[in-house]
Amino acid sequence: MSNDTLTKLDNSLLESLRDSKTLEILRGFTAGTLHYALIAMLSWISVFSFDIKTLSVALVCLIIIGLANIILHNCPLTQIESQAFGDCLTDIFNRYIPINYDCNRRYEVQLQYIILCGALSMAKILFSFVKDDIKNYLAIKYT
Image 1 (cartoon, one colour):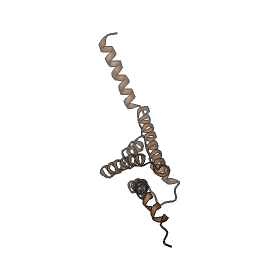
Image 2: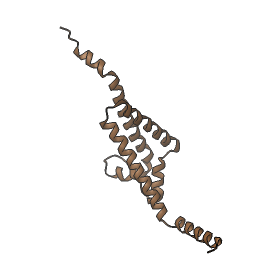
Image 3: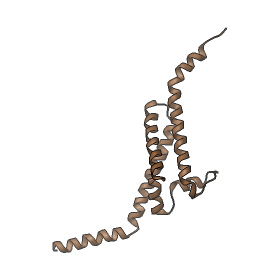
Image 4: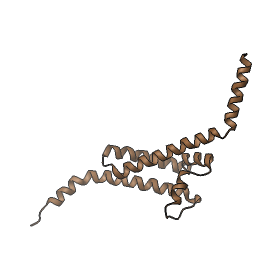
């Protein structure tokens, strides 16, 4: 085979992959999996961890995610999922929670979740700083 024929085959393969829906579905699946992993990991850390370093790293991640969400006015992973599937993890999750939710409020609801998780992490960090002082105050006997 000549080099020209190999180039044509390579170009036709790239064009068929680009035109097929398989690449878009793979991209959406990857974004959805990453989205779910980030949400699950940060939620799990915020709720169940009491280690200051872990909570601090989670809080920094939440601040970065929140800033990206504010600057872009939507989560980039949500946009990729919506383009690939027409639906996203946020919509699927919020359909089963009894809150006032529709697709027009997706940005606000995502920010609510980010702020809630960040506030929980921040409260745990602050509590870990003052827990020894609180223990000393409770040990004082005034009688």
